Length: 369
Image (tube, rainbow, N blue to C red; front, side, top):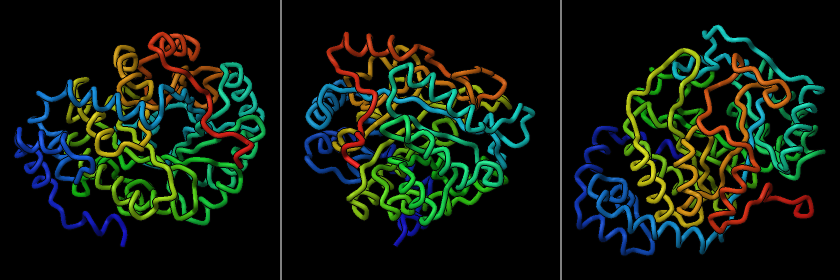
């Protein structure tokens, strides 16, 4: 059975109503449990839980420290290409957007590596748009092999592949793959993804299962906040996480639910999530799954990122560029979206250490391979 089979008969609006129907008593019951159900998770992200946010924050801090210690992983994205055949209406890489397009050569990849290494990183997240004809499996596999000579960990956030292709990526040295559904609302998914590879809802939804079947060390899932009702997105994501951890228990899992940022095309979000609501979602996930990793990107504000260091986040990006070649030769005309927090890694490290936490620049070592 695929995850799709577990949600295909659900009605989005009915799930939303069930969240808003949760009561104060439901929240208190959820907070008293060791193992939470999806119904308990609904309670924790419902409006009824808002008066319990301080308690949830303290629980999140305690649970995170018990599982991960007082440590934050700094990570950095490296965009290999902004070529894209998709027409996602909210994305700066949209095929219709009149932006300059670029795919890095070997020499340009090495230039990026040199700058990123100078920042102290020993792990890198490689990203592309979705255009296999230009930046397909062969290109990505080759890029992994180049990067693996310089980094202890190489991770991917690229277009959905077949199981056999993910196995190739793992054999080339890839440690983790991240793929985000953007929205779990199948009925409205096509509105946001009208053309291109990404328009196939079911193929994208099944990607984490193919990643796990390929034996990848870690996989990440998530939703883009701004397209649909955020509380409902979180419930579907919790269901997805529970399905994966039950069926592919050897794999480690990571979550992300970034809020939409300005990008080429000027798309405006349909639904807003406040910082307080972001906190509620994050703490609900930590209480729901003590072992899941939770990352926070430079999409979020400085203030938010500073405060969440001790409250449930396990990894934070720093010094990021979202344009291909952006570390050696910054060019905002190539970027996917405008970042919010532009602090460099050393500044972020200082802030994190001042809060009593250690900083690591890798969580995977060559001696473990």
